[in-house]
Length: 199
Length: 138
Image (cartoon, rainbow over all chains, first blue to last red; front, top):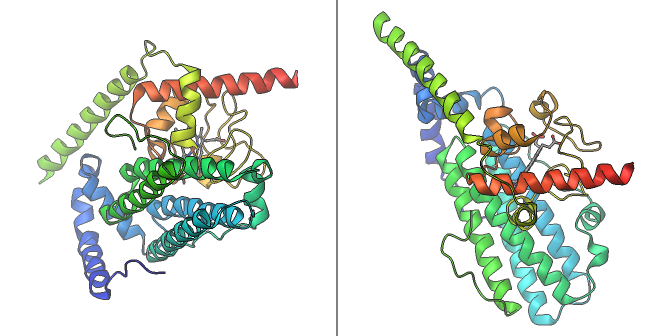
């Protein structure tokens, strides 16, 4: 599922920006420490020859989405979910697949190689799936993974050099917060009293 | 032009020094970590990628405190972290959590924790976990 396609025209204009960056880099090299903008430019330039550091950070987010997709798969196949919860689980899993596809595109755009998903049995072991005996257990795991994912995305944004990917991460975090909120409602738990709960 | 460059270089030098001083004061020993609070914070802030006893998106943290960076067996680290010559303790973990990419450029962990108290709590928790793991081995 592709939520957002980057229009080809925009990709072109980005290239143009890189081209101009190359000549500007020399004269501002000494100042790059002062300016995140110059740093971002340098890393975009690098994207042509080797993957930028953004590619590594986005790949880590991709690993996270692979795990999320697997977690919902394990939940769906557990046989302990009622039909309403199962339907919601399938919907959320489809969102995570949308995230995965968007992240794969971003890694490729930066010249990196997207990480692949591991075997489902590895995720089951890492997530302690054998300890999940009931729908309530599964919902609690989902709540904690969705909260962790929202916070993870928000905490990585300051490390990304390209604001466009920062925007993507914020949108991903918003989806995870939506999942978390719905799941909290499903188990009848109150929402946080304080503002700025995520991040 | 030459003068401008010279000024810029001097300026950068001055700023770098300034930042270093700031950094030292940021690792203030007055901040006491609370391992109990750290445990639930760890779930919320780090739990998407890390577990204490399982390698997931990031390496497990059972023996992190007191061990060398990049040393968990079976975890595929980036080159940056494998080559990071650091032993994890209160000071190095505090630096890492403020900005991993600054400490190990090219690392795949970009998550930053800006709240000083939260960092201290999580570090206290990691220390407790590693000490408990070491005690079990003995």
